[in-house]
Image (cartoon, rainbow, N blue to C red; front, side):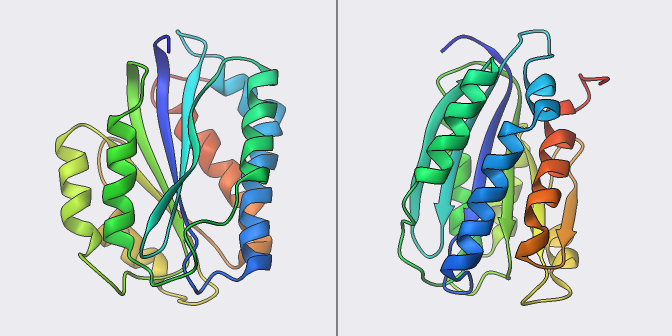
Length: 205
């Protein structure tokens, strides 16, 4: 894969707290974001004219829902959106192993086949870790490697989750965390998050 401006790994919570309607709203929101012309313009507007995108589903196990794909045109974005919509819900719903999920996302990011100017993990979920290692140590490893880890906290289960994401999950250059009240708000929130992540410090659009 040719070099890109950004390697972006989406890490999406599919634990037992996420029912199948909520899962559909998440993947639908992600697909809609990549179909958005503004997102596409940012993704193709950098010096290298492309980003690389992958998606990991996580609970107390992980599964690669979207292998690394290069986004350099509207057609590429449409293919990514379709692949996300078609991705089966694997692994099966389980515990919220946020630390292990973050570690797996960082591993997937490290295997990106394109050299990237920036590397970002985009974590979204609706709860604190309740199995396995906490997210902080994995976050610190990623930050030490130059990765930015951002968060989207869905507040339907835990109204104070944004504070946890800010303290225990995010880190690295320009890291930020956003929230949304419920899954019905996910599409707007993830689009805003992708715009901010893709724009980074190198974009002025």
